[in-house]
Image (cartoon, rainbow, N blue to C red; front, side):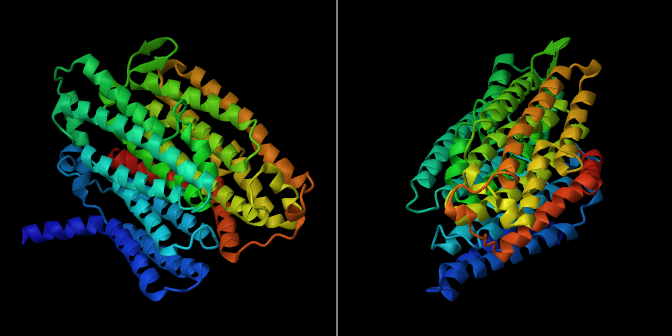
Length: 509
């Protein structure tokens, strides 16, 4: 009887992920059986509707799960299994589901594929992979979940058949992604070789017990693991795949890569470093340097903030601008991990979730412009305020939030990140990194305002860009909803930050 109850409890914890996988299979079946021969748009709407219902049911299941008090016991209660379920992973997975649902809505009016069922099914499988990745408590499960997500995203990037840019983007993404997987797996193999364990908490216990570890083996493990993750989060100088991928991928695919996959990657990267390798954090204060992963992340963060913002200044393609902007935002998000504290990891989750909603909204507006003009040059946004005032206003909300202007979500996200770094280093040892982050954030305001200049000041340069704008109702509602979320998280950040902070404090990371 006890075994049956254990299995029922396991199924209850895994239920949201199982439901997403079953939804992916159901979407394939509906497209094959019920929608055969129907127009592509009808298939997208029907299959996408099934996908949204499955995602919302999964989110509702997550909301109804009550986690046992035993989880509060800490490492001993959580170290036995490969799957971790607690309120913190619950909040992250709900955010991932909402971001994935937004990406699916963006696909409703797409014309780049006739294979609606396959495309939406792969999007759902990527979502399931990200959810499994967030709950991974074991290196093996994490790597399998990471590859499920990555392979799905490679396919989604190249789904625009007959489009050379899409195929080139998918190939580059695949090559860089395969390389990052090799680095990550090599680093994991060294961690296993050192400790004999793959469970994250048991790895931490081995290091905490004072076992003898060759410093060279440990630094090799840290270096290869960090490089592998740097590829995934597009941190400089491992960011070269991002601009071409953002530009060449279909907009729903690019939106998922920029939002959900970034949130999941930063979450698990922080968990690996802070939980399993927390003993070797080191320090990067200007007055107290100590070797470890914090100095390495400081270099990655500084390079990402500088390279991303400076490269974005000269972009004329909006999607490439968003790509370089994403590199810079990845540098900002690394500050929360560098803080090496509960406040730091809470700020990372809040920042990446709010960034995900913002970037998804920017891609939604871009899809409207690209559908009319056939491209996404900055000049194609000229005169948008006179053709669609409300959409233009929402775009201003997204751009100013990305720039960190109050009272929007991006401002408070950066504020919490910078505060966590200031509190995480004694005697303001990381003040140099904070100054660099603030300075580069000020630089970013220039290219975000360039977008607003095109929308509100410039006149259209082509006939197609001057014609009345047709915004599909689903995309319009998505844009309005995302703009409202960005404003709400700016005015009332506690509605998301407080539950995350309480989960981190009560249940650990």
